[in-house]
Length: 291
Image (cartoon, rainbow, N blue to C red; front, side, top):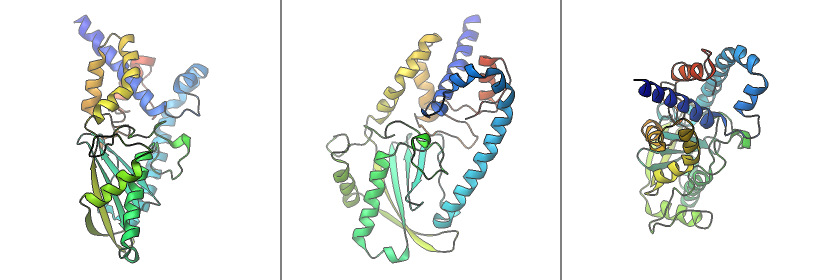
């Protein structure tokens, strides 16, 4: 019984460690979480609850404003956002978006066209090609509502889909062949068209094309996490395979994983429950961790 309890505690601690890393360690321009804890631990404990609630309120207001802007063009019924297995991102003044499903292994690129753009077929192709190029090079956004691409708002230090796209010959996509890859996708893949109505009352055409991820995309994503997982697995006496298995089940290695129940991160901790328990176990205080 003691061994089982120790393993559960170790898993809980490891979940919190990976949660903290995935949500907070991306921002390399600010002091990291541990530095702040070391420098002002007492003040942090006293203010964290208020900070979390303030953070939630600001995030909710920013998201509502962001969604309203998207709905103007796409319509509320067509709004998409990231979930536990999908990473969704809007670009080009909300006129294009990508949705990568890490469970299904697909990346869908969509653009919307105004009525006066439909007749120019070359311009339409270029718009789709550009959306694929943006997807390939995107480092993700910590905050969807932010329109800037500054390092402070990047989800990753490298492109999210690095080594996870491949052409029909099996060659991985990089800067040398991405333009040809995007052109071939637009020329050869099925492109669907749908008339949609935005919240502004304007009718637009939404074009969609779906791209399969490389066959080994999950292996690539797991290997990117392996150094971190191995470090904490060794520290707490847990097999790395177990940790990777939990991440696989919970988020499919989605870097933007957030469920409709507000479970956050690779291991899908809810700040008000699992996050609360983890924080109490690590720091001895019943405090909700901030994102």
